[in-house]
Each structure stands twice: as C-alpha cells, then as structure tokens.
Length: 153
Ligand code: SME
Image (cartoon, rainbow, N blue to C red):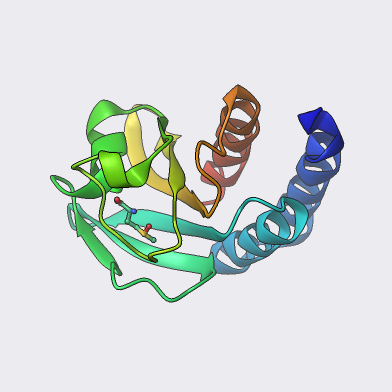
C-alpha cells in the first residue's frame, strides 16, 4: 500500500543526483528537505540538525518555524536519538515526556542520526500531523538518505 504513496526509488535517485551535482553541503541539505516534504504527503516538517559544540543546531528545514533552533543533547527526542545512536520513532508525541513541541499539529515524529565513522554528526528530524505516521519503510529510506548525506556533511 505505502509503496504507492512513497516512491523511494525516485527519492533516492534525486538524492544521489544532488550529491553528484552539488558540492555545497547546505545546498544539498536544503534540496533534500524540499524533496522530502514535496514527495511524502504525511511529512509535515522536515529538517536537519547538526552537532556543533556539543549541541544540536537547526540546519535547512521546511515547515513551520521551530522554536528549537538549538537543542541540548540531554533534551528532546532529538537529543535522545544522538544518545541512543539510533533512529527513534514516536507514534504519539504527546505521550512521550521527552518530546519538545514544535507545532501543536504534530502527532508523530521520526529522528534518524547521521554518522561519520562512529561519531554522530547530525540527524534528520521529521514531524507528521498524522498519528503513528512512520513505519519501517520510512526508517529504511531515511537511514539510507542520512548515510548518503553524511558523506558530504
Ligand atoms: N520535536 C523535537 C524538537 C524539534 S521540532 O520538532 C522541530 C524533539 O523533541 O527533540
């Protein structure tokens, strides 16, 4: 069913194209967030956070402006994904005490860390207005994109 909604081959083809044709990492991340929000109907906020000076700083994003432009590592689902060094899917953000609210409309969230070697260098954060929007397919796609983009960040 969902394969009809998310064209993963198209998305990965575009990401590979951006990586091959652009060298500016901010521009690559900007194109990727635009691609993702345009391609997947239930992705309502898409952004990169990058590790800088021991904190997470908001990079390119699409969606409502977030009050969380800097997130401490001990804070939020975003901080938890860095500490866990693993993707976190939250089906109901309002039931998760770690959650830092960006928009009242957000119901579920996925955070996917990006690695350089063993080090977490950033993450992809996506919010949905749909409860329990994210599945294993999103995780596989986004982990692949994180791996591809991390070669340039
Ligand atoms: N919800 C995130 C904060 C970032 S905003 O969603 C853009 C968190 O709990 O870490």
